[in-house]
Length: 209
Image 1 (cartoon, rainbow, N blue to C red):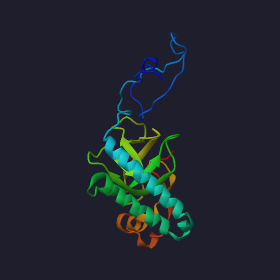
Image 2: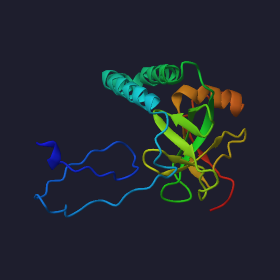
Image 3: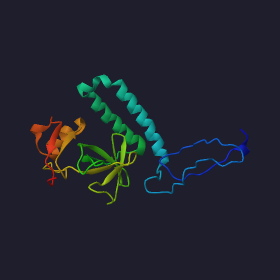
Image 4: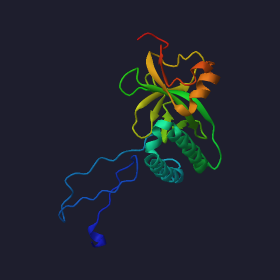
């Protein structure tokens, strides 16, 4: 196609780099052109080089899951995923980052949702946490009963440190405990070593719903 038959239009800021092709007769404008999207805190791409490296690690982790899918019942798959996540942290930063066992509750549809306890990794600025390949960014006080949002889906979550008495939820809900942090959570945080194999429990919550 001749170069002078192509028209370019900048549509602003989005969640990624997208190129669309519209075909229209010569001398006539296109029938539909999306509105320009201005820059916001949610659409700015930061540290693009790290994002590219991270996507490669996601592909390797998916391949690992496919190869080990038959081992899920033995617990080996969870341990291998933990090793893969640790390798990912080194690949992204060149050095180990601060990690912590934290409480995470989904707030996308209601003030109470499914929750789990797992190990997250903090970025250098402390404004985002990573969990199993997902990035959660702080809402800086802008959420309702939530303090983080999923950078990909924009869904809201409540993420906080685990309390010794187990009352992490605002309202009663079921909580799953990841296998790779289960023993540490029950023995060091809850001080209940007799429950170190418990995979889920009912959290009574801080307030009655």
